[in-house]
Length: 422
Image 1: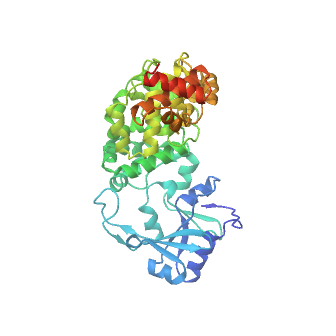
Image 2: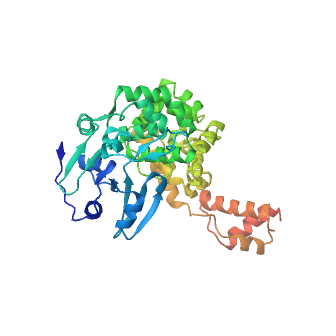
Image 3: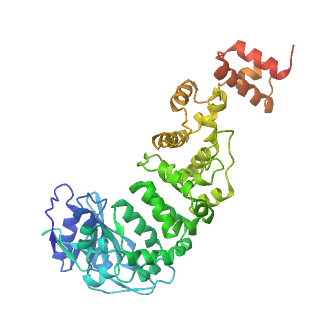
């Protein structure tokens, strides 16, 4: 048994909700991830309560509640500014869809933790005394840095296939080794991940890459077979030792927290330029990359950022590129993603090194948009349509590459060249 010394002054809500349930005659404990985090000396993101009280009984105790999943016994208690999730102790019937139980039934506290996923998430805490109750061996596994399923691993992963991804996430987040029997079940059932919705996969992958080192996330996704179930083409490409080593070296350091970065990096091995690192003209997005983004239900911003990285990386390694060729890249709102990838490339020592200092110098001279000369060109006789677009682009080119100044003289010269006048 473990006992924690807890100071609830800053966050009293969880203890007060448990106390109110107990005063009403119900059994109640803090449960799950918050107990794990407290044992690890971390600040929990939220606090969950497990109780013998039913949803109706919880609503009788508290004035402000929101039923979340009443069919599963889950109710949200609004306590001050906080939201505390209260779940009724339960047993579960068979999982018929790889996501949720067909039915639930009453249970004791010990039976309730027995249906949870991993031992480190199966702990109960009395917030008043600090006593931690462990029915599943979670304390020993935390001390030994082991991730282990509660009960039969194959049964746990068959119940909810997302637990395979959660196993990887917890392993990388808390730097845990995965118990051999748990790992063996993940290998056998990794193809089940493909049965999950793209939204659930995306949410779990995003958390995973945000919480742990990219190279270990990649390694476990590959070695477990999960990545192969999501993108066979990407997994086959990473079967090449040199390509896998290159990507793992690229991501050896913790990545900067730039939105859209992880999706762009994960798809890079499918780029035509990746294996040989050959700079040159813009590349094309590959069909396998498009399929992968669609499969994991990437957001529009993530898709646009990934496409910018995959197509424009070769262009940024050409020191002779004129500023006008680089301007569309610098003006793209996802330029920070591409620049972050160039920085990680340099830190990893992967040649050819992009001229980041020179790129930054050029970017500082590039206005955020082409010159607003549309009306001036129309007054100079350039009609709306393709010719007007050409005139604005040509003016932009002369400003960026030749140092021309925007004004009447530039408008007249460009209009003359576009319209073919004397």
